[in-house]
Length: 329
Ligand code: COA
Image (cartoon, rainbow, N blue to C red; front, side, top):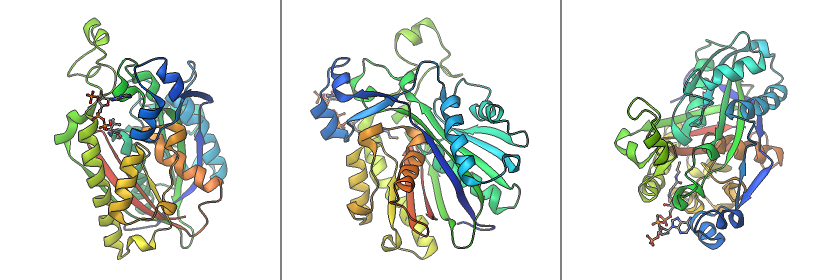
């Protein structure tokens, strides 16, 4: 339950790579079809980062916009949280790389790993640093270069993911706006359902691991699907109930953009009408930690989300780790 100084998203920005990889393009790479991908996932195309860009470069571009829109002096940003499953490298943290690229001299920086829930976890942590009064402003980054960790011979995973980045500046809320509540959870019993098996201490890189695509995404899609459609509604209801709110009080529902069937099922379970649900996965696929900020930012830019609207964010990802945030724009 949120306690302390209320925190808000003071500015948000995104970076979307220009290169489009359509379902038709994928038909030429793996044994798949536009029809299968569209009906099973809702995805029509995804973006691919240029070869000379890493996750930190996309995050930096998104952060430039977020900081400018926030009107906050960069010197007041005292913490950078990098949320990504595709860091530039195992260490140093991608957050440190972005902190340097942005010249944020007064900011501490670290990465957090919560799979596709990274940005939601990051917002939660940022809000608590503001709530306690410990810092003036936090920069939360959510970015992915998932195209670099795909096995392009595995049709069950490579069609799902895309690249992109988002960034948000979190600061003390102005009257009536801000993060109202959050709920975050995890269950490592499902660790095998979604993972990159090699490249860590458990299975260091060898010629064999590279040959066997062990540095790429491995997923039990059905298991993740089953967990997603139960755990996301649970988190949303918990966050709402603690506030004494119901789904009726929500103006916009922004779920993690992984699969249209998951989104529809979660919406149905919660009783949220389709017209309140924001969906853009047909354009970008699953961009993991960039998914929520891209959907939120586009909805704000298009005027769909207006000042004072109440928004429900929810996500699930590798871990499994999941959660919900309720905020007033
Ligand atoms: N094109 C064509 N056929 C494909 C395919 C593709 N891209 N991917 C899988 N198939 C085939 C399978 O080989 C299988 O064929 P078979 O019956 O001959 O064995 C068939 O389609 C059904 O596969 P299945 O895995 O049962 O499909 P599904 O309906 O569960 O859909 C996912 C697969 C991955 C789309 C779905 O499970 C899903 O979205 N899961 C959640 C994944 C996710 O969102 N992860 C990230 C969360 S953060």
